[in-house]
Image (cartoon, rainbow, N blue to C red; front, side):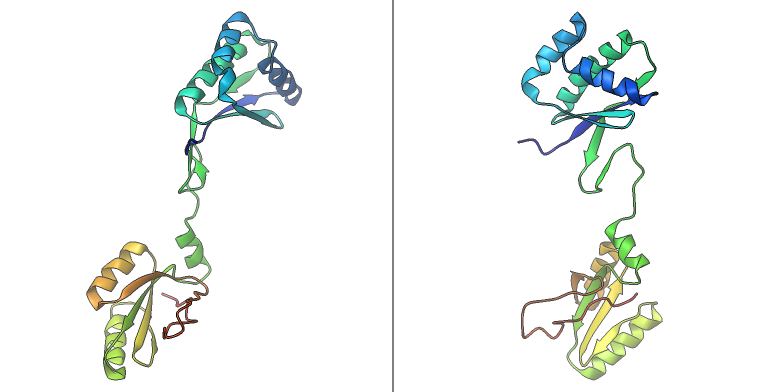
Length: 196
C-alpha cells in the first residue's frame, strides 16, 4: 500500500463542461488517450468533481504523470477552456497539498489560544532551589509555574523546549490547554496549559 497521495486538478471555465469531461475520461476517448487509459486501467485512480474543478488522484508520482498525460491528451481535443494543474503532492505532516500555502502549525494554534505548545518540567531538590530557578527563568523572559519543588515552563517550540531542558535538566513534554498523565505518583498529574 502506498503512503503517498498525488493529484491533478483540472479547472474548467464552465461547470457544465466538467460533467462532459468526466464522461469522456470514463470512456469516450480518442486513440492517444485510450492507449494511456489502458496503461492506467489496473491503477484504480480516483476521480472527483467539485463544481467546475475535477480532481484525479493517484498513489504514486509515476501514475499521476501517466494520468496527467491522459488528461492533457483529452484537453487538447476538447472544445472548451480548461487547464490541468501540475502534479500536486500531499504533505501529510503539514496536512496540505504542496501547492497550497502552509497553514498555522498546531504549535501556532496553541500559542494563539494562549497556551504553550511545549513544556519543560523540572524537579528541583528543594522549594528554595525551585524558587531560585524560577526567578532566573523569569529574568530570562520565561513564565515558570512553580508548585512546591517543581517547575513547569512553557515554550513556543520543540527546539526551545529541548534547549531549555538541557540547560535546567528538565524533561520536555507537549503542552497545551490541558495535559493528563496517568502515573498516579507524578506530581504533574493534572497540570498543563502553562503560558509562556
